[in-house]
Amino acid sequence: MKRTSMLIALTLALALVVALPAPAATVNCSGVSAWNSNFVTYTIGALVTYNGSEYKCIQAHTSEPGWDPADVPALWNIVGTCGSGGSTPTPTPKGTATATPKGTATATPKSTPTATAKPTATAKPTATATPSGGTTINNVQVTFYGWYDNSPPGNGIAYPKNGGFPTDHNVATAGGTFSNPSSFATDAQDGEFKVGAVIYVPYMKKYFMLEDECVQCESDWRNSHEFHVDLWAGGNTSANENDLINCEDNLTSSGPDATIILNPPSNEAVDTNQIFNSSTNQCENITPP
Image (cartoon, rainbow, N blue to C red; front, side, top):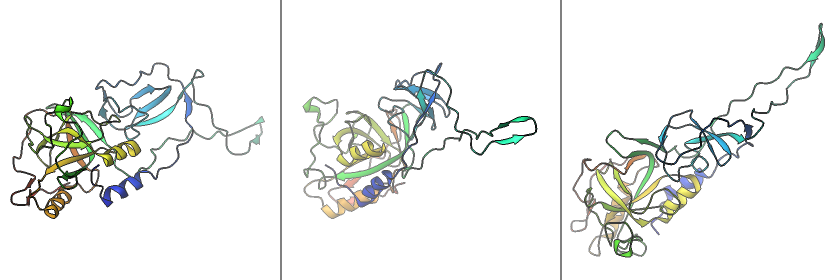
């Protein structure tokens, strides 16, 4: 389990305060293609079907396994439940029918209300293909952990290479390059990322590989589909604990507003400086988003 800050806890609490959705209307899904998880580019307004319902894309992105319309409301709005009848039922007319000189009274029907996105406490995650390769994901919460706030303290990881996992290291590592990425932790249980996935964090100018578990990240994804990655900052028994913790806090993003690249190309710019130097207890001077 990784360290949980008060800021993350407040963010999670806000994310849970959402309005209850209205019952879905019945719509005609004839001719609407089924949602495809195989890295298909969807534009705003695109319609798909999934599990018997029709959804409308509200944020341009490239699909990936686990980002289905039912589980990622930040990318999709439900239009209605697919039915054999086809059209959306007409709402009950408002107002009282009035007589006219020509005879039969008529009712003025009210128009079908336009659906609006329900408010959420967190920013919408966005995922788009980049020209150089990989998938850019915005609105990501970036935190850090190290030797002292790892659980248990030390450099152990949940998915070591010698345990048969598709990773590069047996302990948490601070390499930062494409050939030797640093370790990071997140949710690998519910479809957010896969063990061994590589990301590039532009504001850190470093590559990271998913080699560890982050309990808070798992909670954020399950409860609000918030992307959250916990990056290894380093440290060892000789490092000053307070200096390392302060370094982690200083580099943490102010909220879910950082950008990462999933499956990045190998030629991104790399900062070879250590995030935290355990010999000097110095933290890299970087301003987080």
